Image (cartoon, rainbow, N blue to C red; front, side, top):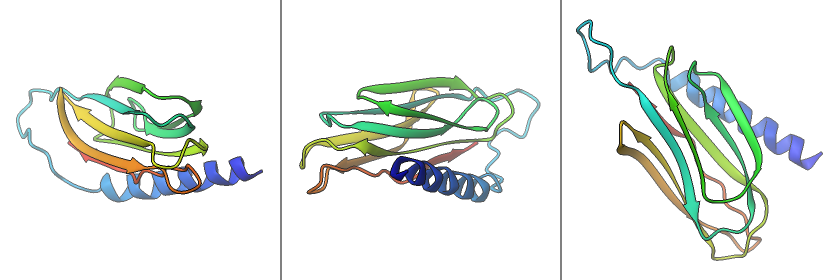
Length: 133
């Protein structure tokens, strides 16, 4: 039941932040040539617990994977979405002091990064990492 509550909270936070970030008009390409929108989500580190990860897929829909060990990567090419977004939190504790780094990489360039250290209970929670094209 606790896992379901965590999934619900993460999914809600993801949808809310995705809605705010998708309203931006940061269009760097005003011409007719399509922009390459290759996205790589990545979490690495020495954290030994497991993560629930929520990310936007090729069409901007929220997808989730649970029970994920590090390292984790997911590569996509955005088709209809203008925003790439992902967040994560541990669902199985690691050891206090262990670390993990989340990166959102676009066309080979790191656009967002966040490093967290497990708290006294061995938990890590990442904020939502977003990038709008």
